[in-house]
Length: 264
Image (cartoon, rainbow, N blue to C red; front, side, top):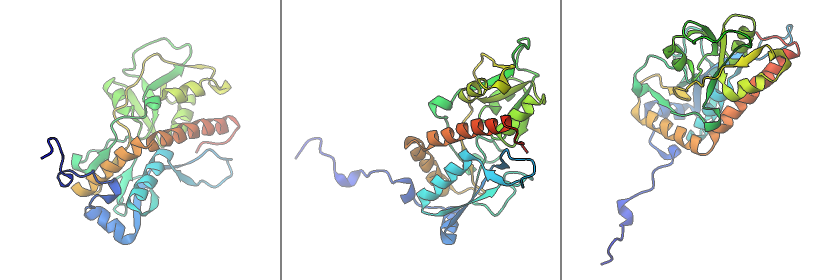
């Protein structure tokens, strides 16, 4: 008898996300061979006479495509309806950044933390404005911002826009006292000539969570698979790459605005 030997049959490697059992929700998607995902969508800055074409958000679409890859399914992205993110009964999943919706916990899969280099949120305001608490001040931010919950707790008056660039344009138009965004992105924006009248505030905003994936019904097996896929996607660097795309898109859109394109 060998002391300390482990029976190979007593322990198994954990299943990869794509090998985990599907619940009814994902079984139906497999039967269609299509995973339908509702995501944030909005027009990009363009020439004023150009037709408006909504494009999917970088974060949402990157995660949606990753989930499709784990399941071996084609992904069909659908714009979230204006009537509410969960009002479309023709989608299998809903992704809207870190947006927190009033649903049962069993209908949500999520990533707790943002990538380290994108975790800190910040505020920017007029350079010579007198320092005062955030409480009572209006703050522009994008729908699904991971810093919304922190700002609410601090008593800010939130004004939400469809995208980060639309929130930035609204702030520069004087619709809010402050703009909330990821710190590195704000530091880069502050270097542009159009932003010379603005300065970052010293405080750091804590993110409440990163991306959330909503299921239309309670489905424990499907939720467990999606949570496992989220963790694997994060571990493989997919989450960081998605945030890089988001940050770059904001800076490119800002340059387009500076060149005279219109933010719709």
